[in-house]
Image (cartoon, rainbow, N blue to C red; front, top):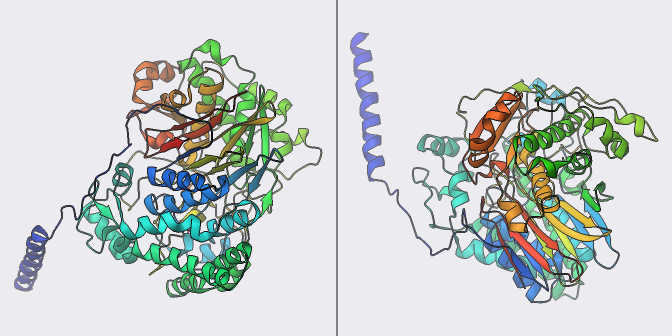
Length: 628
């Protein structure tokens, strides 16, 4: 027996030794480097224009939108050209066909609209199903994490109602980039910087994902400025274009051509490909689920801060935290505290934490949850919540939820407890994980139409083989608890984190803005808004200013980890404020300067009375602003 074990050990060591020698000789360097002026972490000034302005998550997406506007397209045409280009050049963070929450301003009517940009849970997705499989949370790296896709529905519905061009026009740049390639940029390098072991694990778990991003050579890391092509995604977008062109060439209208694109996706060959993957890998999405899927128009939520009106989508995402928190802060003399002083940070953090407590207690898909939005956005409720703030003393846990029901004309159902997360530990996670998800698009056109769009979804679940499509993992934002406002039910939308923002000043459009960043999104947007409005900063300076984020509530993503009393500050703030904040009771951690864990804001503002447009893009990311 000992002899057998000894021989077996020698054989195993020999095999590993041989594999190591083979690995040494495998190609690991760049394939085909491209010239590229990478904007990541580079200083830039605000961009000024008179006709139109665009700010998006990558230079290619910005350029795609600008080209559409130069050809006479409007903000809606340009926004979706940018979205598709972003799906290519930032597809690991904002995929086709992921979530696409959106706010729209129509210049003729002066109205702001919201369109629902998050997919629903499949009809077979129940708490009982997941519990019967032994899951405490919805799993990543699995088709079970996938919502029904939303962005094609968003795109086609809005293009039909408000666009002027066809799918062939808005997809041209994306198809060209996906076919000819683009350079791997710095943010992609950070997000996809997987170790050899994790690349091997990705290949074993999700081989098609590995082939898309590592070209079938999992041992070979990505290299900065190396060319990346996405031929399968190019074929998918081309097939959608051709479905439209077939209708148009036979005399069909622009709207009929767009309907053909939707049909090809939700009922045709792409639906077949999605369903085939789910059948083979024991997922839940069916052909009937896809055929029935629709988003929908809705009235946005809004709150007030001085002469400003702040708009958000409804509570299928977290965006309403922004106006609710700003209404609390309107009653605080922030300017006297001085910008980014310990007292200022403490006040802003406490307002945000009070709102996040209410987010956890009340926010959910309004088609399933009776959310007390009237009470939450009532100025008297803001007064009540402000009284809960504790000067010079941190909340050591998520504060108690409020009682917005007393300000409702119609009573809503009781919310769930805020404390549903598990205490987080600082140990390094061993699972495969991409750096971060989500991007952003802001467009304002010559007529004053505006779009604010926060697309997302990333390849931590199986991509659809042969299509280049990522359906994402947004199901993991549900709780496996039907009594929770964000609890899973068939056909329900999770309370997703991506949330676009829009602001009016004295009843007139003032700004479209947003950011990536999970639970830090609303925090970055609030800080940027205050920098601009309270402290009078230039747009780019307001974006560049150091930021802080709280983690004093359950994380939106399963397993909903929770870090009581924790603050993270960019290094400049940590050096100047950490000690004072620790004395208030915070647990404080330092981030590197320009760390996109605190978001990466893009914005387009319009000044009064001359209508000058100003664009800003965050150097914490690949973001870029351009206008005319």
